[in-house]
Structure formats: structure tokens, C-alpha cells
Image (cartoon, rainbow, N blue to C red; front, side, top):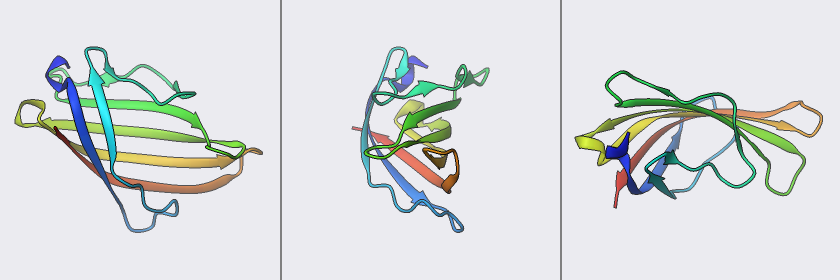
Length: 114
């Protein structure tokens, strides 16, 4: 997946029926070993890469900022234009400190290399 190495601006559009709300644009950096997870986050399993290395599925969980609980993410991305553009989905599921569901949303995601 070395053809994805670079800095990207990532944009999110929440699908209808989601309950988590908008996510602002983010700058992400993808290195030789893939994109690093945010501080405090952990992989929920190995990344799954398609045979042609154009599609990546990643699962991870993070603590909620400033509140007890966790946020679990399933991100599926595919590349276009030799890795200059990535598109896909991210499903976010958030739980409070007692394990009760807080919200769940799926976002259409696009990222362009800068």
C-alpha cells in the first residue's frame, strides 16, 4: 500500500439516519506502514487488504475525548488515481462508560493527497 504514502485532507458526509453528527475535515498522514491510529486507540484486528492492494478495511477503538466510554470504527477505503484520491465509508459506534449505545453513524469519506 506504499502508493498511498502522503498527506491527505479527509472529508466526511454523514448518511441519513445517523445519530452522531457532523465530523469536520481532518488532515491525515499515511506512512510506509499505513496510517497511524490516533493516540490511545487500538486495532480491533488485522487490516484486511484486497489482492490488488486498492481496498483496505480497518477496525479500531478509541476512548472518547473528555468522557468515559469508547468509539469503535470500521473504515473501508478504496483508492483512485494511483492513490492520489481515497474514497469509502467509516461507521462510527459510540458507547458510554457503562457500555450503553450513545450513537451510530455511517459517513461517506473522501480524501485527496496534498
